[in-house]
Image (cartoon, rainbow, N blue to C red):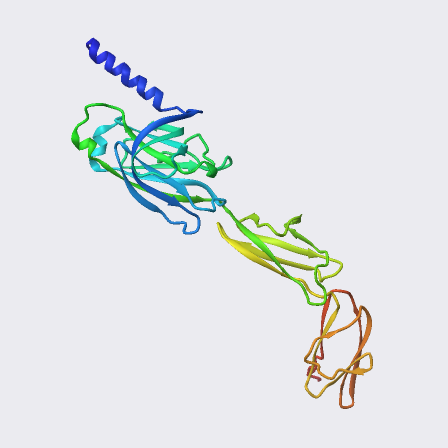
Length: 333
C-alpha cells in the first residue's frame, strides 16, 4: 500500500471513529435538505411514511399527547444497490433544533443525540427512546441509541450524510423509504367523574385504586393496562368496591355514582301476597323502600298462610326479601 492509500485508509478510520460513538452535549450548526416531515401520535397509533435521500433529512414531531409513548420506531428501507456501498453513509439524530419548522435546504442548530454508520442491510430499524425506563433493547435487527430524547425536545431531525467523496451518481440518486411508528407504553389513564345524590352533595369521601389513596380526583391517573380495583369509602355515602379495566394508550372516564347510604329493602313475592313492614302494609311492593338501620319485622300473608321474619338492617346496605314457595314431594313405603 502506497503512502496515499495509507493516508486515505487512516482518514476513513478516523471519520468512522468520530461518527460511530459520538454524542455532542452542546448545540452545533449544520445545513441539510429536508425532504419531508412526519407526525407520530398515539391517537392514531399508525405508521407515517416519507422518503429520504443520501444527503438529506426528515423532520419528526410528536402529537400533543406523548404520555403513552416510550419510544418511536424508525424503519429505513433501502434500494437494492445500497448493499454495494457498505460504510459509505452515516445517520445522525439531532434534537432541540432551531428552526422547528422547515422544508427545503435549511440551516439548523441542534444537539446531536446519535450518530453511526448505516448498516449494510435492506431493512434498517432504529428505536429512539423517549423516557429513561424505556425497556428498549438492541438486537440483531434493531438498534437503540444510548441517548434518551424527552418529548419536550422534539421535533428532531434524522439526517443521512455520505462518508466518502467521489461516489458515483447512482449512489447520489438513491432514495430510502422512511417509516415512523409509535412504540406505546403498557399504560393508560382514567378520569374520575363523580355524581352526587340530589340530597347529599359535596360530602367527603375517599377513593382508593389498588389500595392507594387518590388525593387529587381532578387530574387523570396513569395506570398500567389491565384490571384494577376501586374502593369508595365514606361516612356520608354508600361504600363501593368494584373492578375496572385500563386499555393501552387510552383515557377512559371512570364514573362513581355516589349513593345515599340509607338502607333499602326490595320485596319479591306472588301478586296475591300482602306484605307488611313493621305491621304496616306495603302499598307498592315493586318499589324499593328506604328504612332506618336497626331491627325490622317483615310479614308475608297469602290467605290464611302467614310467615314472619325479622331483619337486622345496617347502614349503606340493600336487602332483597323474597317469599319462596316450593312443593316438596317425598316417597313413602
